[in-house]
Image (cartoon, rainbow over all chains, first blue to last red; front, side, top):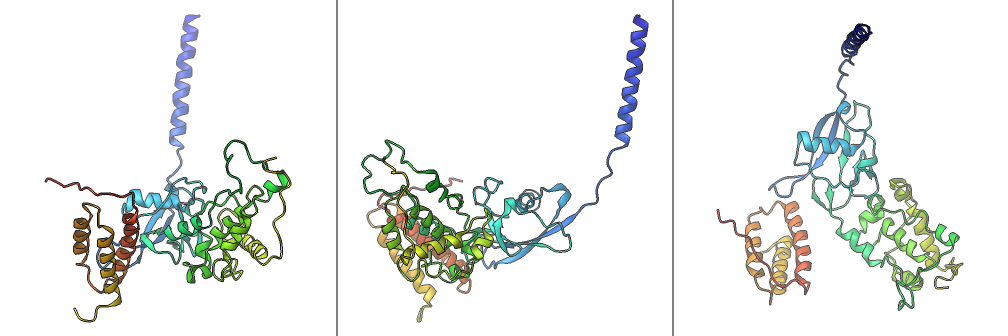
Length: 281
Length: 79
């Protein structure tokens, strides 16, 4: 019995070796490299006399992930470590990597690289924003405008704030769908020509959509104050329904519609409904 | 220099605002003067860089005006 089992073990081992040889011999042949060109906007303020220019990088798409951010990280780690850009979540939720890719504002982490090897991918920072370095825009004006709309819940009586939940009916909560998902990436505001020409006084679609989100929140009681703060010819009414904002939004939201609703509230055409459920009831 | 350009006047105004904001706060004046002198070497024609420096300067001025900022220290490289 012993000799039979030992022979069986030897035979099976030889069989396994043959199988391994076969798989090694049948390894995949190296695929032809797919070289894609990336033309990236570069400017370094620390280098005297430097002017903004386009620098072209070549990346093999077979060794790179499918998204533009993957290519940028590959360029930074392997080709040019001085390339500067913002990034964080790599999944389209933080809004850090917003940039102009091929003429359209979008998030680099969810923009697929166009696999057509004849055309280069053009990457620029968000249009009409001051540039800190390479692809990094100066967002301080944008954030100051967001701060100015007071994006927090305001009630007349805030003495008992935090003790209990403020109640909200299901229909009132559904009014916020499509507004609260904004990640403040600034893709929409920087795609609006009206915001390009008046970015100091016009608030821009992103900020206005958030202003609307707080206006129609059934738990918020400062709607009249919020509307009065926007009652001047520039803050809202520089919007001429160009609708570039809705086209550019990487999360699929509709800032243009929100601005139209603000205009309706400002002109008195519609009024905010009473909350269906008393928040402190 | 006779007939200062608008950009030069802006830089000088920023310098004066900085020195005014630094009153009563120890350690800032020397840094301000040092930085302005260091960047004075940028050529007049490099407006892109001068405007970049101005924007940075205005932001630092806002920070300096904050009453919570009371002093500044330095790290000196001994080597």
